[in-house]
Length: 343
Length: 168
Image (cartoon, one colour):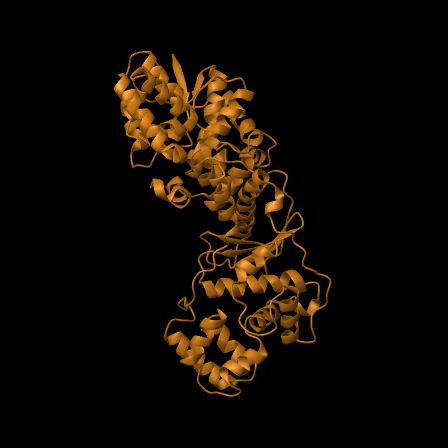
């Protein structure tokens, strides 16, 4: 438990084994042994490690579920994430899911929707078709906006995690814990970008066995087609146009996608030509949208984790402080929601 | 005499504006220093205020640290600060002050003696540290906030009835 926490906080501080060892005045091997639970540091050493990492001793004592088996997806080959950042993302996912499974163990695993999506299928003849297949297997209608994506996926038994980590280059990762799939996305993205990233990861998860769906560009195209299908794009935007703003912004809002995504879809569906698409890109650059497009839709918050913790608090299975510890929030936040009359 | 405290008892007495009464006990009150300064922060400076009243911050020994790790793994429903308080009480053979149901259960399993929020109040009354009027006043406040503070309403009502009968 302590070993995993040392690694987690060391990676959070973006410190190498050497750097931490040097700060404390011990060898790199000693830190490595602590992290891999080959040796246990005594209380004096734990205090030194905590001080060097800028955390408390009790942070290093945080419970970690040692029984969970993780399989993390690969980061894309040309990712700008350093190896250490990649490891931190994986550790953050494990830390989050560890807390999530604490409440599952307390309430019993029946509180989790069973994951029963049939994954035994082939991708379509083209990206539009693959997107349609993906919609079908996840139980979305063939046409129209997909609505609250996060809620739907949580109800299918897929864990959706918004990772609050300070790594701009990270957008998403998928994997499994036991037999249950998870999708982790950077919490610091707009709701539209989170939705797109989630679908991108779904494509990796469900269609990646097919070689044609392995590359990032194809995954992005299928994700775009999933969120705004061909028929919908033609109906909403018209078969041919030259300019994308005005009503297009409302369409983007309706389908929960960014204008950047909508413009690429309009181009891929042949609604705008390359030249008009480039005109849009220039306009988007001038408005600063290509670096940071404004959010236009409300956040789709994963609710399952918080809901289960609140249930355990309300049913007096756990204390408010335990609930706060699991969710990593102040006790007053839980108190306000679970005992509003007392605040 | 020394008692090891969890946060729950302080929360309860703070919510009903009776925190100073806790320090009238004929005992030193101990708590892990990080629990005081990291957990008791609402209202702001609450931990510092408790120290100024006499709460004694303590460090964890190697044995207490190992025991804490053990308890965190064994008692899932306990917060880590609950596990720390239990480990200190166990290692130092002291009574644990807590109103938390799960911590009481774990303490019973570990054969650690426990005193709850009402038990503390009884002790204050029995040792003459508070007057009967204040005792009743605190009981009534506890009753009013019993759900939020997760206090045993039956126990409170029982005490209030005894008092009422005596004054009929």
